[in-house]
Amino acid sequence: MSEKVFVLGGEQTDFQRNWTKEGKTFMSMMREVLDDALEKVGISYDEIKRLNKENKVAVFVGNFDAEQYANQGHLGAFLTEVNPALFGVPGARYEAACASGSVALDAAITHIRAEDYDLAIVLGVEVMKTVSSSVGGDFLGTAAYYEKEAKGVQFPFPKLFGKLADVILERYELKEERFMDALAEISRINYANAKRNPKAQTRTWFMNKEHAMARGGDNNMAVGGRLCITDCSQVTDGAAVTILASKDYTKAYAKKTGRKFDDIPRIKGWGHRVAPITFEAKKLESVGDKYILPWTRQTVKDAYKRADLDVKNIDVFETHDCFTSSEYAAISAFGISEPGKEHIAIEDGTIDFGGKKPINPSGGLIGVGHPVGASGVRMMLDLYKQVTNTAGDYQVKGVKNGLMLNIGGSATTNFVFILGK
Image 1 (cartoon, rainbow, N blue to C red):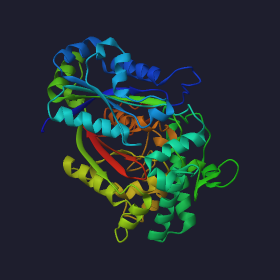
Image 2 (cartoon, rainbow, N blue to C red):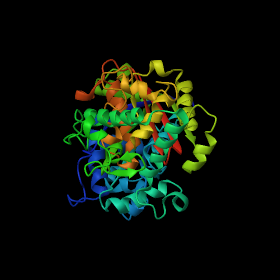
Image 3 (cartoon, rainbow, N blue to C red):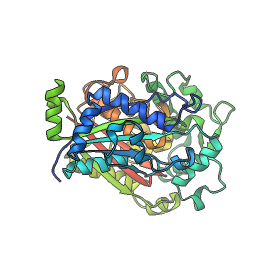
Image 4 (cartoon, rainbow, N blue to C red):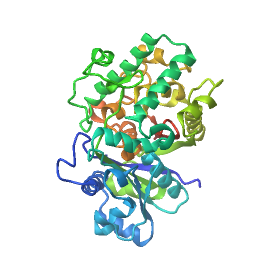
């Protein structure tokens, strides 16, 4: 299992689109994003056919809840509907709530490390605008312990992450005004970053710090405890593809396409941990620990150890800001600050676009959008863009290594990947 895994690139859909209004389905989304990704990377369907004859290519689909949003399961087999070249190619759907894209990435990485495949196509997809926000909120509740935490609760996840905000305030004995100001700044940063991203859902929206601070009014209604609309990620239709390859295939690909092998980034580290599923159990388990989400911190540490790197070596972060409180907790989990001091890294500009440790230059889930099963794949794609200096207007200068954190549930399933040259 010593095989190195490289990322050749990929593509995402425009997260601003409403595919149902266009009269299109998840199938249209899968077809469009895979065609675009292969073209962008420079791999043809004939090459897929060639690899398939040797059983050296596979497809990994990340999706959370197509059964409810689209009345369809078995998404791993639907790549055969994209192109006949995919007939016979191994394909399966992977699910881990909002970390579904990352569990698909993890499976693909493992298969390449085991030398089963030379090429792995990872496709994350979610269509969410098929139902009202209240119905969708109930669907999302199945990512928690539904019977205990979501049944009969309107918008259960804002409430769960509102509880995280409460615990942060209580454990670290923070001044509420300063803490809430820090959450508003997280929102401002993500919306501002999204304006630079041509595929971001909110790139044309208005948002500033004053708006984020004006909680509780008609324009920023409360949705979960202290959290309001500006603290939340988006309901999004979207798909993303990231293409992974073995070392030998990457060398041959580089020669064929004229790219420098040394410029193609590889997976340097990874972590995967699962915390207790209910938020209350997480809260109780973490009593006495410096970290409110200790398993999230451990996942980051595992990735650092495997990569033989530390926070000082990471130039950019993509994190799971499903809510501002989740990004707040991630700051110390990454090692950017000590637990309880996250607000300082926000106030002094450390995590801003031009800061020492920028978080979510893409705009994150708050700014780019959050098509649940696609978010992990999109994060990896954005790390690829940063490391290869191809992020355009949202490119951070001098990126050598990037880290992503993708969580499922109330920080239950935790995945971290480190990508670098």
